[in-house]
Image 1: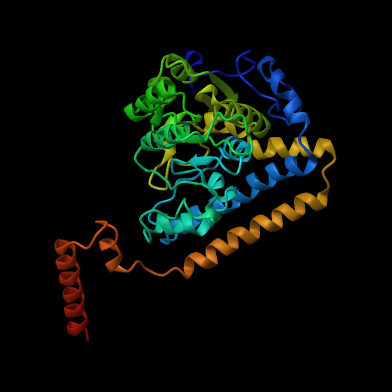
Image 2: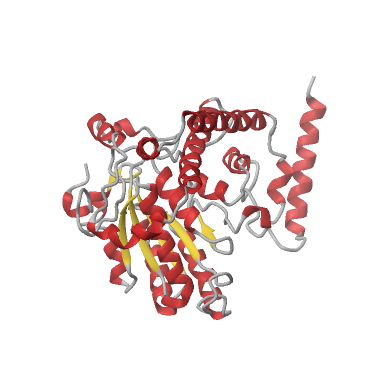
Length: 382
């Protein structure tokens, strides 16, 4: 388990938490400033949070199964991190830009990305997955598997927004902001720290959203840092808040406030969401080699979906609602399985597209060579 000096846990006064593990309302002192915002949420909003989390877990489990069946090259599960992602994504406005890492499946689908586009990426059928400039994708940028690189991309865009006068105008319906997702392992990458330097210097309209899932593959967070990770942002002059990342209400409220402040011209903000990666780092990983069953069971008791389920039950949510969500999740998972099976294989010619922005003789030569080679194989086949 993560040692106390390296994490913000339990009832530490700086931790923002609204819902306890059993789904009861038990706000920490730091959560008090956010309670009015949470009280303003309608039943439809709260039930929507639960639906988002439940449906994406079903999709995530289906994608993991598809990889095990040889349909995908790789899959990075988001199992256990649903609350941090759903709350933060729902806190963003339509004009905001979202930069995921590579396991923010629900962040992207909330913004309109087709979940099968994520599967196409992990199947190796596309270089990027989707076009973030396409309005149907809601300013959700593409996955970045180079750890931490997306923080530089996000900061560059946020600098552009500030310099172009697209933030800090006082018009919340027009002002734009950026939120970038990364993990505790990526937080040790130089790219993240360079991004924070530029963000603080240029007062970018940006939120750094760190999902501390306790493990950078097999390296525990206690080995990575001798102090809570949110303090790294503070070291650059960026106001930073630690939250219970398994509490979707805390994630929503803190991110909403942080984005509003950044969008208004107050400069960047940082959030550390304390959560847990219940699954493997990716399907190429075996967490039993470095994690104990006791640790996993301890975090299973803090499951974000079970927590929200209990909370909604206490508010009077009906059996019909939960049954409908289960049916929707099953349909989404089944649709992903069926459509994945229909994707087929990758055209080998695709590897030559977009290497250069203009036609290039070397690429043309290589393309012709491959075509001739494939033709020779077909000629020699029985």
